[in-house]
Length: 151
Image (cartoon, rainbow, N blue to C red; front, side):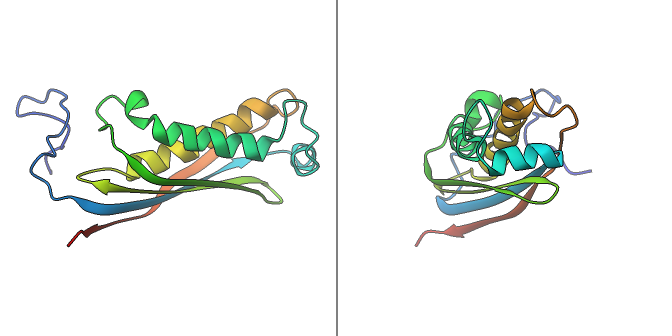
């Protein structure tokens, strides 16, 4: 079994030392889904939710979450993000969330992208909970991550 990067030789949690890693351009894309009732989808599409524009608020919440990732995930490094994009779209079954994150550094982008999607979907849930008791958040996953050395 491979050693976990966030534990020391005694199995205690630790923050990974990235000081010896090279600086790279890093990008990550994540996505997820929330199942909603047809009535809720209509309310969102028609922008009739009492709390406001669900998709726009959730997109902004996802961007904010990516910027706060190291405050939420204890061993996550505090990094400078170059770009965070969060897009939500309605489908016939619910709402899809997708995030794209990029940074330049020794670590980063993956957890920030996943956090952006998670909080965006939680925001949809929060804004719709008064009208839909059947919502299910699912399939939050990393679609892609890349890193390239900077010459």
